[in-house]
Amino acid sequence: MKKTLTISAVTIAAAIALAGCSAGSDGGSMPGMNHGSSGMSSSSAPAVADFNDADAIFAQMMIPHHTQAVEMSDMILAKEAIPVPVTDLATKIKAAQAPEIEKMTGWLTSWNQPTEMPTDMPAGHSMSGMMGDEDMAKLEAAQGTEAAKLFLTQMIAHHEGAIMMAKTETTDGKNAEAVQLSKDIVTSQEAEMQEMKDLLAAL
Image (cartoon, rainbow, N blue to C red; front, top):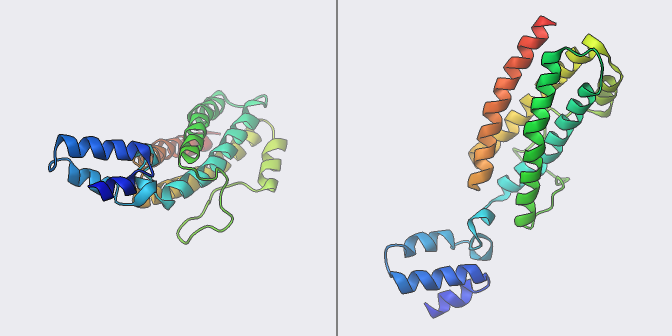
């Protein structure tokens, strides 16, 4: 035990947890503790820091993806003569995604990971659905019904990309909070996509 405690003492919290565990019961809860702390210092930290590369990449990619969705929503909300259901949707998207950006930024900070997206994405990870500069310029310039149609068309593609990224996290992620967020994104954005398709058909 002395050796185990010395190794785990890299993380004070884990050492305390191990000491308390061994003092209280030698059997029942030890296997669970050993399982949780088997990955050396990174995974012997508190549960919030229990993550893998897929979790970090998910947050790093979804932050700029969400940021662009908020920017697109701001653009449409700043225009006049936009149908109310479209502005309502833009408001809803902004209200949902802005707090998620803060949440994911907080995770990356707590995991000691960069908040910026890596330049070389691992195989199986891609950030699809993002608008290019030309797309954003078109949305900025459009007015009225044309702007509403363009916003809906672009945001449908944007949501499709986010859903793909979220499903990858659901499959490959380890952090419980990140995996749950990925599932929530799929559920909410699939519903919003259907709403946008209905609105687009009515314009």
